[in-house]
Length: 492
Length: 95
Image (cartoon, rainbow over all chains, first blue to last red; front, side, top):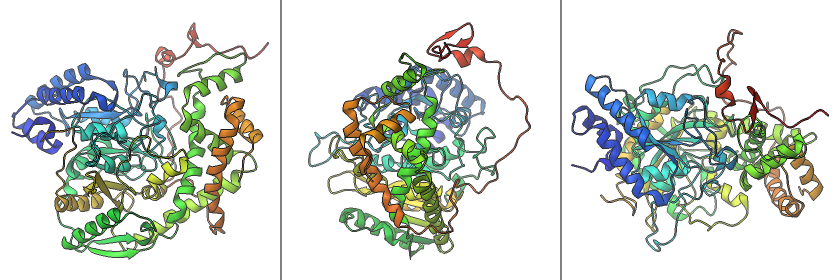
């Protein structure tokens, strides 16, 4: 029998129903692996005992024939989702002792579906970063290694890097992520797993620590497209507690995986082939186009002319919303407090002590672009360009059904291999940010290995609330790619 | 766009973030880099374009104006850095 930790959720679910093993055994196998993978630092808080209890309850429900869609399946919960009674830090010092008195809608939905959370996974502080190196709880390591030099520690990407590392190392079968500019898709690509950022409004933001509210969206990270469909169905759905949650019926995402993409038109945006794009990424992309063609789809060249402005637009809008959202950390009602002589001094000292470098930088940028005299020149201007970016996609989707692009411009990089200029780090998200600006669903799937043995991802982008087409195409590509490489860390 | 030390000090104060004097030069440099990067948006023609405030094409929902939550004082206070007699304790603001 395949080792329990190498099963997909779809396989494990079938085996649990057939009583081949119990949920307790499945969860224990993953806890054991998580303990072995501890040096990767993927978890901020482990909830192993809680998980074992939940697994027992799952076994009872399975025996009674009352199993939920994810009954007994061990997952990781990004430490941005508030979990009742379990510390939730957003990987920031300012929330290092915060124990939410309530449960986020997404984590509550997963619990209701029977999923068993074995721990809270690490992220860049407040989800601001692309490397997991801005966390106040230490760097997270990618379980993949370069062939040329296995001694180099690689980043898992970010911000959902702990989730990606935990999945790739087989410590969990799946995990939640959140994506504001690429925080699900880029780490998924770096760690050789599947990740989908659903349409804005598909998953409730209630109880998710806010970064940039017009962009933040939760989604599943898994090892197969089918697992992503299963998990998305368990996470998503209308929630009256989030006024931007879409009041739409939830499709059966798994049923969308028909294997048939004949006649679909796949957009290939010419602006995603900038000068200097590595030949390796170009070849990966061309290979993906060829696979879709073989499966009966038709590639169509499209133009998204405002693509080059997406990054600049994002780095006005996201910091602006961040500075506004993070104003709530004032040292009064929750979070860390540092005393001062006056109330203002207490605010300023608490916030300076509680926030890390990247978060501070973004708060300052956001405060500046929203300040009197600059609002129209920066913030209002960015909101206008954002509409042009969204309009580009809307126009393209008049002729195509789905869009294929690379997920990230490179494979995972080494810790400390980037320079000090924040803009260089931000370039990681150059292919994922436009989708976020337009609120569209975007999925990254592993599409091959680099010459140095590292996973590379391709991104599929869909129409608003058409995750089904995205998943259907991804499922076909997944079969064509046949990605079965394992990180150095994991035995077959 | 180049930000000087005084501007950084002003926005840090607006953001209620304590910044040490010896950090100002470095921060001014970093923020100037970022602002220079985003300034490329000036070349985009946005005449007549409506600012996009939400990607969701939805009207904001309304609900009945009734209490839906509450009676959980202790839960709300549980994470307070300081509390007393069922209240948040804050520094004195009125002499």
